[in-house]
Image (cartoon, rainbow, N blue to C red; front, side, top):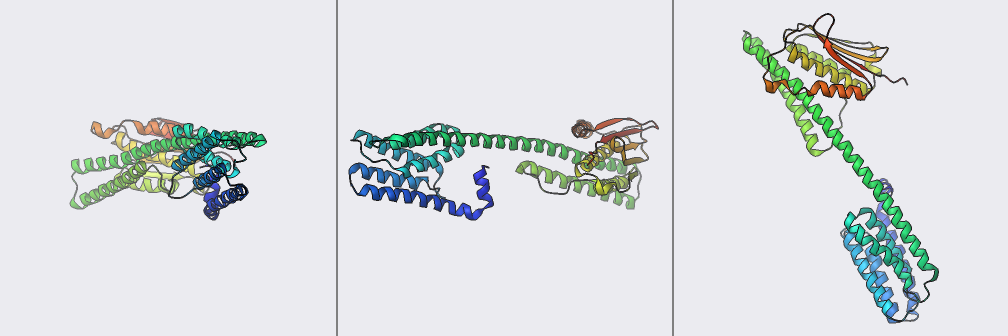
Length: 381
């Protein structure tokens, strides 16, 4: 958005009165010229006055009339009047109101018209503005004045157009990056919940459970499925609409809830969070910590079928915030190839941690099993 439109957006009353003020100024100029020309009524004077009125009317931003038709009409009227006056005997005829109206239209066209239209219509308006004072028998300094004004207005408008174009491109790049990030978020959320559903369904299938325990397993499956569907619908809706919803960023509180949900399906997970950490931890760091824990727990369900416990630790070390997730499993769950995923979770997690200036390591734990360790920088205030 241009600075002018941005200012008008913050001041709606000024935006409502600006067209009226512009119309009043143009009408005043045209009226003054009409009174001056009426002292010597001639055909050239009538042409100048009529053209000035119509061009000024076109320059006023009417809500129901688009800019391009108004600009084309003004250019056609101005050049027609100029041609008729050049064909006759030179007189004192040119009008300042028409020239100023053409400058207003020139600026608007160069700013907001499509590129091809602006490339044709812009020069017509600029040269038309310069040609208006040339109609006079003694154009003198006014020709140079309006030629300079046309160049200045054109240069400023093109500069603003370039800035607006760059702003639009930057915004599109940010939206594209956000959509890619939302796609990764969708993968991580759905993979986490669906993996849990598959594991619980396998446990219910191959384990002799009573009716009461089976009902509890199905309840957990239903809960995980509902959460997966809700997350998927929310993120897909955002991807379709192209605008992110405002909601709290996941943090330590969500890590606690995530750990509790994971423990209900097993194996049990133990969470340790350093005292007081939740109150001062930056939101972006907490969000990445949540992402590390969620992806690690998803991998535990995929790759640690015989794990009996999972340990999650979040604490501050000399290198920053350390997030460590370890399990004691050694064999993977036998999932179908379609359910195993495309190995995007850990890769995306590494990219996110690295982008923050941190480090991520995943591999066998010294005491057995598997562990994921992320160290996130904490900038000192």
